[in-house]
Image (cartoon, rainbow, N blue to C red):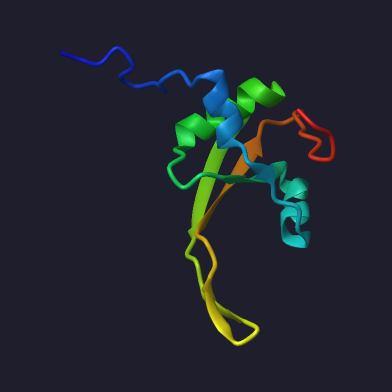
Length: 108
């Protein structure tokens, strides 16, 4: 028997949407992505591309054409002579359809 959601993304709850989009990544490199109609967000490690797409479309009311994700492994760093561990992070680079924009300087 086929799943009710075969071939399409499962609906995401409103609370999960706000958990998925942690914060926009505002760096020089991420700001240059705006030339290609892309925006970068930090997301949880368990976030999937369909979840991210539906959350962005619902929260910002834009059309998303693609979602690329990347995981950054935590590094060992020294702080005042002591070893520490940076936490792992995951970023989502969201490509928007022509004519759609997200202004990351304003809140949701």
